[in-house]
Length: 343
Image (cartoon, rainbow, N blue to C red; front, side, top):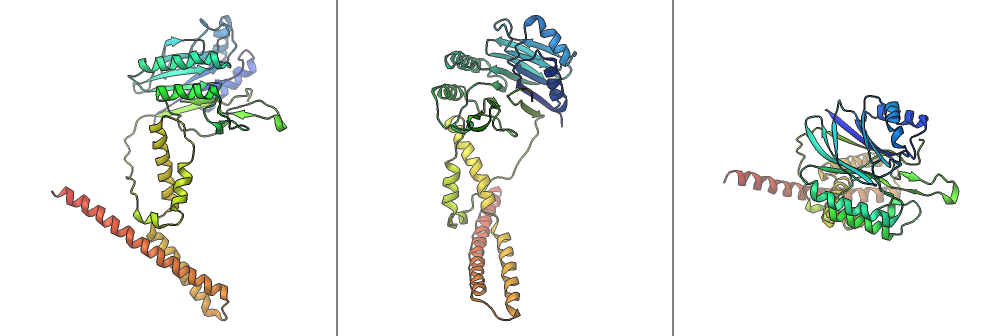
């Protein structure tokens, strides 16, 4: 399977040669095809030297025309993909990438300024781009310098005005966080003890105090999973409503429709795990009951063992009822499916 990996990393300055080596190793070890270097602090006259030091065969572009310190520098391997900037600002580089297999993607590499009011122009910029980037998939990634949810701050659950600004832009553009693995908090203040703070500032929608963000894109594959079936006997379980309430109360980012989709998806996975097929459960319980009854043949029996057997009998009976309901529902679904195909 052919895969393209694109990354961003706030390196907090790229003038030190030791950082060149760190970036070079990161690119090599993760098979990166394209990377957005954020907060590079590299002057334009030094940019060519820095890029060649990292990889002399790679191409690059930057936002030096609007930012003297080059807050955003984008580098890529021209043998694997092409990138054409379409809009450059103080806080972002937007452009179109053509990946292997002639797959086209709109990309935005973002470095949000530290000031809330200064970031407002970035949010307006993203809304503007949404109207232009409607022909191809669009990925926005980088350091936004603001969190979205209370859980993205290690020591505070306060929702600030800056967070509301960010979320309004995300909803307006109808963005959704990509599924992530690895470190949840991507920045820390590098302090120890009670003063330690970490946040999730870097997202895709060492030497540095930021962790790099990487997205992996495989060639599209047709996949048809088994359809989800809600089993009526689940509602008989005394823990059913507790599980549903617990999953539904969890926070998710995105537009209202996206949030509902995520809640349903998480609930589906939880129900599948919590309420296994009753036929396998019956087999397990009957085996346990059989073993206990064999143990009872050994001699004197305590009241605890008798109670244990009684509880197992009840559990087997309950599981058997669930099993019967399961197969009745399954047979009706199968009959409807086959009956419909014969009409």
